[in-house]
Image (cartoon, rainbow, N blue to C red; front, side):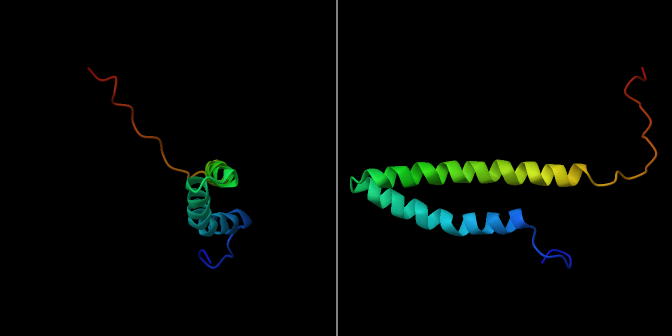
Length: 83
């Protein structure tokens, strides 16, 4: 829970990807070193899933932050142009 709210679906997906990352890396790496082609495929798939999940979660978090109401504050004085 985050501040009394349930985890959003993408955060739950992020946790699942995080739990499967290391076992997939280890199994794929050992299989690739042992000469199995599918081990290399597992490593490549793991890389694609990790990069994709970072990009999706980053875009989702950016959108969530940017759609919040902006604070109503007075603008700062611009002193960069003073000589």
